[in-house]
Length: 88
Image (tube, rainbow, N blue to C red; front, side, top):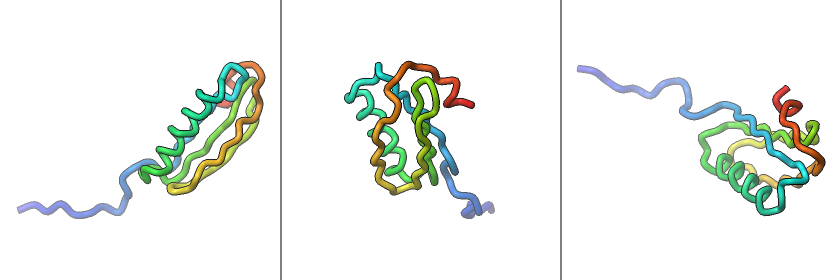
């Protein structure tokens, strides 16, 4: 007979990085939608930590939140658009 026993690893993701476009072309509705998606990830509890990178033509802010935290992100930047700095 076989048994299914709990493992020593937790299901889910340890750390998730999210790059948020904070360029001027992102209106308040689009930024609110981004905030809501990130908050949904935090609320779901499947990710231990989320690193939020705000980027327009350069990285304008980096914030770390843990599962269950409340996201109170204020958009920084508001210039042009270039994601490369956020990926580096």
